Amino acid sequence: MTISLSKVNSGLVKVTVIGLGYLGATHAVAMAELGHEVIGIEPDSSKLESLKAGILPFHEPGLDKALTKVLAENRITFQATHDSSSASADLHFICVGTPQTKDSDAADTSYVVAAAKELAAWIKPTAVVAGKSTVPVGTAATLKAAMDEIAGFDVHLAWNPEFLREGTALEDSLRPDRIVVGTWSQHSVDVLKEVYAPILETGTPLLQLDVPTAELVKVAANAFLATKISFINAMAEVAEVSGADAVSLAKAIGYDERIGNKFLRTGIGFGGGCLPKDIRGFVARAEELGVGSAVEFLKDVDAVNLRRRDKVVELASQELGSLTGKKITMLGISFKPDSDDLRDSPALDISRRLNAMGAKVTVHDPVSLSALATRSPELLREENLNEAVRGADLVILGTEWKQYREIDPQTFGSVVATKTIIDGRNVLDVAAWQSAGWRVIALGRNISNG
Ligand code: UDX
Image (cartoon, rainbow, N blue to C red; front, side):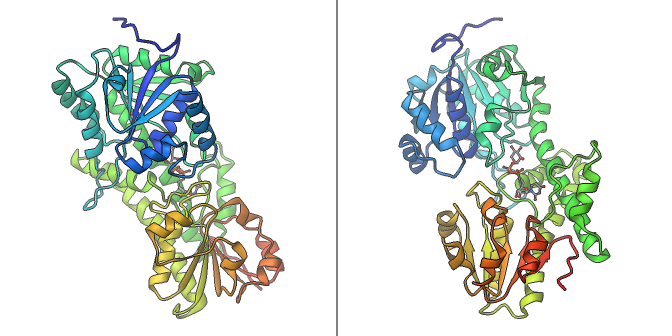
């Protein structure tokens, strides 16, 4: 069946993007960049007002400029709830969050369920609903049943997971490796093909799958990436007691194309709003389905990852003895560079623990200090890098921001009390730091400090 779309202009589609967190805001701007007419829907008034004013509520390189541009071109508007204008859209993207539940490892799908039910009361029969949120396998089928009942017709629901990374989110959205669509209706695929046409024209593959597979693609991809990182961090544990060097090991195994050299950076491990909660949610869902043992290993992936944080706390204690009153400077607090996201950040976890053990932890980060003030006000914050390390008994590199890799160890050395640094991300030039008189400690490496 071919259903005609109420096009804005030829090739352009009217879309809504529901939930303007990290994923939704990026996707909304990307859709507007592709030329579509976009209505962003977000009930949180502070996020909404910020986006309306052209200010991103989070740090993401390039997205702020793109937002300003599409606002000026009137290709995007924002509102708190559905109305007759949003109800006339041909395509609705659900982008709300699925955080870890407070009392278990399972993903909290209540926001997705609420968004889908609310939408079902407004949509027209020809509209397509595309879920982009990361959900436990089986969620879409439940959503469809609920939506069909509310709408009173067979809703065109598709699952269309998003693979964007923070720090390169817009680029990842506009130039993805692949587009995945899982659906029960060909009409959904046709509409999504139309909306993604400029991307597909560049040769990006579109994989048309069944719905459970599409749901699984996202969690499986994140589970694989997390496993790769924990694999090399497990090797780091072995290296630390055997005199081997995990950085060289990663490089050596990465030459094998079957292994590849990406996502083998050893250090304090993965954090953020996706990898940690997705592997936990995956285990919880597999257990519900009676196949918990199939992904039991992901519990080890999680444990290896968390042990790297313990290791840094242990190393700091070894270096400083009692931590009471000692000044420790954490360089970088976000879970990765080019982001101000503190969710499950390894650097933040380590800082809080050192602080709880009596150390005076001062944090420097190029963009995350205001987010830190709300989240962990007990930690000291310093915007000036030299002031942050002044008098430090120990410096820890927690996030590999470019500016930290470019520090001159000579100048830096004249400000601290003790020239000891723990390189939590294995990015420093060890020889240069050592020749400037620093003691360099790194995870997974046996560095001789003379
Ligand atoms: C991830 C997925 O990569 C992305 O495809 C998905 O859509 C969302 O989740 P993101 O959370 O933005 O993206 O970050 P990612 O680049 O995957 O890094 C996750 C964490 O792993 C960071 O804390 C990073 O520092 C760490 N990491 C990454 C390592 O410790 N070693 C590596 O080799 C790579």
